[in-house]
Image 1 (spheres, one colour):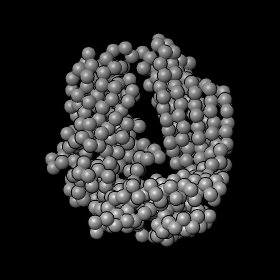
Image 2 (tube, helix red, strand yellow):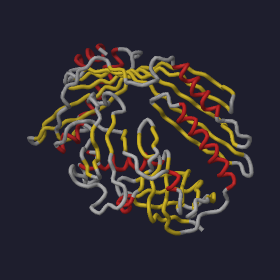
Image 3 (cartoon, rainbow, N blue to C red):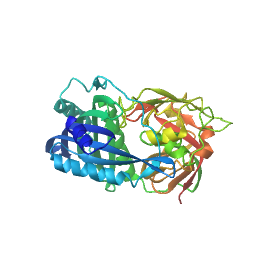
Length: 423
């Protein structure tokens, strides 16, 4: 990175920030249970942010342009890109802002039980766990892709920042298939920052069961209002709305009215109150800011705003970075008891949550209709159309929890009186 610093100075750049990332990965690709390809990759590149300050009509302005460079490029090639970035930064001027204070730290290794093992051994363990669940005569894993990565990040800034960290992660995707009584497939992705073998096994088993049920489902739900139950991967999407509305990018232009000390669920909350903390997904964010655990929402009251360095400066809030991971306190009702007189949607064709207006919606691929006694019927078709801002005062969280790379909290969440289209 010293080379990049030298070239920036030779080009006359006074303010800059470099983030170099090296990824070593072990990648496996399976067709059914047969290994089709195993690939090892080792890639290093760097993102360089070039800043430029100007003054117009007595007002200080600052522009920024980012470029991607690699060590394989010549000095001349890199300098050409830097000069281009300097020029382009003059066309992306914003109100002046200061960079965060300098961070200095010895190299940090993110704690995880993935550490101390070879990437190959980790990959083999996850593959073994996945295929231990692939023993159903009707539903099976059609394909599986697995990526085990070690990521080394180093950041240097003209403001004095000098930090680095190492982390590991496992991610991938698979397709489950059932051919009878109709041929259907279910696609699932996963991402873990721990040795989450049990979690992957549960995901595989649940997806195979879901795929078998989808193959038998033919009826649509009846049109009307339902208590809707969402679980697993759809729950983090719901809580992402609160993280987005507490972000400077929504508050500064007026898209969100969130204020620290004000309730986010309204004044008359009948259901579970949200208690959530921001968790760091990395020791430092992409701007070199140290990420620490922070209280986010306490008993439905907002405690922390977050965001990138520029908009945080404009709002005069601490430049703490953007948080993408939350931990939410569980509820008091069991997941099993929540499955009464409701529509439990377990698979959408596409599920979307809009932080701007609070709407959540999706086309139903598979749902379980539970009666008051807990008896279920498999349904497919129709869609869910709800609004979190209108029903958030009466939410129910499960006491069972799940742990993903971007979320820790209730396994399920229940909404009252949500509109469902159908027959």
